[in-house]
Amino acid sequence: MQLEEGMILSYWLYLDPMFLFNMNNVDWDTLEFIGEREVAATLQIWVQPEGGEWVMLKDLSLLELMDLSPTALEKNTCSLADYAGKKVKVAFRYVGIDGNTMFIDAVGVGYPSLEDVSYMDPFSTLYWGFERGTSLTGLGAAIAQYPVYAPLTWTNMSYIEGATFSWKYCDPITAEFVTDDNPDELVVTYVPELNVSLFPFSFHDRGLAITTVDDESIGDSAIPVFGYNSNADRYWLNYSLNGEEPIDGIYSKLEGIANVLFPS
Image 1 (cartoon, rainbow, N blue to C red):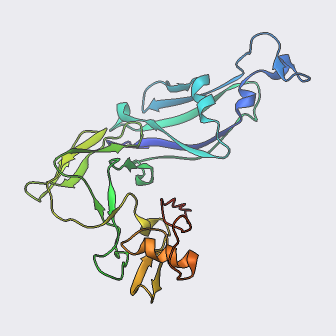
Image 2: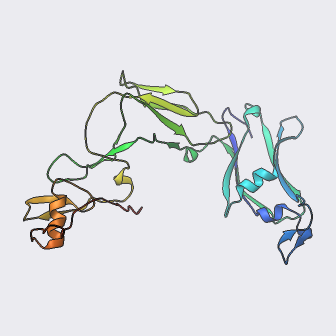
Image 3: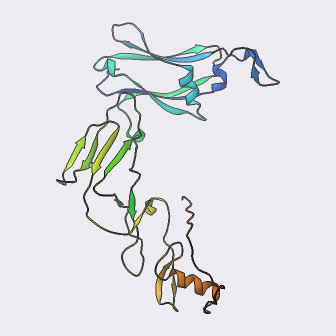
């Protein structure tokens, strides 16, 4: 195959960590090894450039294999950057005494898949909440809002061996889209624009709905059931005392809110 700049090797691997060791010195009554554990299997990846010799590209150590410990086939990648522009052959070599230890499938060479790219938002991210009106309607879009005059950090959570990363974002001064080539994080400081009610999560992406009730005696058509507004105390007072006036020492009042949010 002809390698182009940026191409990588990808493969799906399943292994059983138990059989990475020689099982002949196990006390099956206590399930303990007798003496030192003996490594029984490793996995090697080899590459041969056209007209050249086979070279071991990677020898997965026992620690690497133990860290994988999948419950099913999982995707892995390996860099081929040193062979860009060349025709190569790729081989996997199992080194061990038990052929049922590992299973490899879907071996391919190409550009990194975007499905493996992810990043973490700044911890201070808030999302638009209620409209500023008597209906307390949830705003119809998942729009994030960030603190101003303070550095905000987006963190790259991706690991694709041999890949390079860049960020594209709106410059807070010029409002033009610009790029940043820091592979690990993006740090931006914004200036004020809007002031709206906010949530620490995007309820549009969590399968959540905003629930309100109306109360004719109060005259409020949108009292949040799992929240608080200026009439919440009066609503819960009426709810618990059936409209009667509270007597000193005998009444109900909202002292705190515990919202339990179940993901969809």
